[in-house]
Image (cartoon, rainbow, N blue to C red):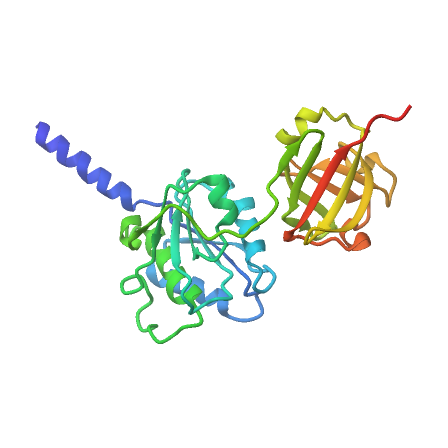
Length: 301
């Protein structure tokens, strides 16, 4: 009887290695004007029609690896463990960059070129393990002479096989050292009464400027609503503009067209114009080479 129980447990554990939640989430810089995204989903469906296929976004700016990295960090934590993400922002397609699957400590899988796309999510979610895709096994049949659409031929195919349980994570390919290619950027830090950080992305619809300065870094300064923050925006370490903005709970706390500082939906310090585009008015962009310096000004008598 004991032997039977041991065998059953072993079988369950083996099955558990294969059992994902059958969810695949796609991200790319392909846009939706042609059939590229549909082709990736078609490949996934040839593996299993039981898969649940979703889109993160396909509107990443062309070749913008940093933007893809941010969207992954912004989105991955909100999906259940076992979800497989495909991220294809791959200006180096067909070159020597590695094709990998990263498993986070929370059990998410990210299928992508290791070209900087994993910079942020690897830091925030952690690397449980990373494996290089063995294309001799995990590549769409008959695609060996195609060198410019790995999103379809390698990444969608591998992700679908993993999500469907056709392969285990171990069967993706050989394990790699637990590190990824990273893009340099200003880490969020507090230096005395100053905060420094990066502008990872714009809230593009409204022109709000988001930073990577978390609420926990802001807290020691003990700002109150109405306190004024002096913020300087930099591009490639050169000053673009400096402005003063009251720390506010809502956009409506300041008159239309006036600047404010606030915590965005990710609980990170951000800056905006009420009913206007801060980014457009002050020519502010985002990316690994954009940064900010923030000082909480003394109260004026």
